[in-house]
Length: 231
View 1 (cartoon, rainbow, N blue to C red):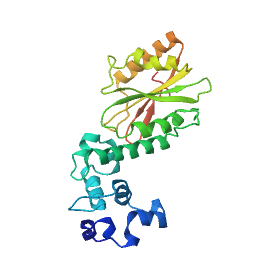
View 2: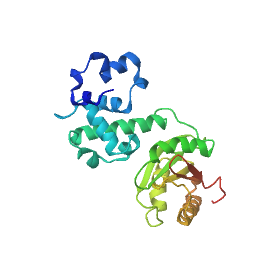
View 3: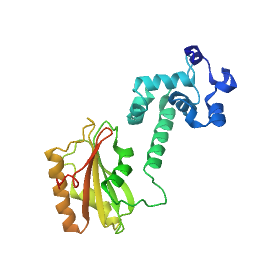
View 4: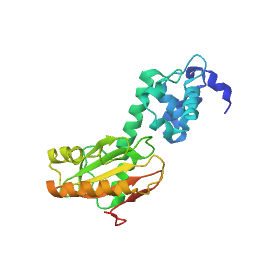
C-alpha cells in the first residue's frame, strides 16, 4: 500500500480503501491496527489523513501496547490529537479491558490462579507504573468487584490493610485475591512483595476476610505466590 495515500483525507480515498467501508464489507479482523485506530480518530490533520495520524501514533508509542499505557496528557500532545481524541482512545482501551476481563452483569467464578490471572492481566499488563488491584469474591468465589487499591511503588507504607479491606468489608465479600504488575515485565516476586502479602493475610484473618492469593503480572508471564508456596 502506497504511503502517498496518507497525505489524502479518508473521503478522498476510493470507497473500497476507506477503513470504515472496508470494516463493514470485510469485517474488523481484515483491517490493520492503523486502520482500526483511524476509525476511532475519524479525521487527521492538514498534513496527513486519519490513517497517517494513526500510523504516527503507533510509531511514537511503539504499538498498541504503548498507546494503551499512555496517559491522556501524553496522547493529547501529539499534533492532530488533542484532549477529545485522546479521551476517545482511552475510552476505547478501557472498553477493551472490560470486555477482556468479562466485566458486566455476569459474575465470573475464580477456581484457580489461572482464572484470576485471566481477569487481571487486561488491567495490569503493560502499565508503566505498579498498580495494586484486588478481586472481591463472594462465598462461591464469584467476582463481585475488581478494584484498584493504589498506584505507585509497592510498599508496605502505601498498601495498608485499611485501603484493601475498607471496600471488601462494605461489599460483604468472603475473600479477596490481590495482584500487582511489575513494569519491568519480570514477575519474579521481591522480598517486599512477599512481606506485604503476609501482612495483608494476617490483617484479613483479623477482619474475617481471607486473602486467597497474590498474583504478580509481568509481560506475558505471571506468578501466583500461593502456587509457589511463598504465602
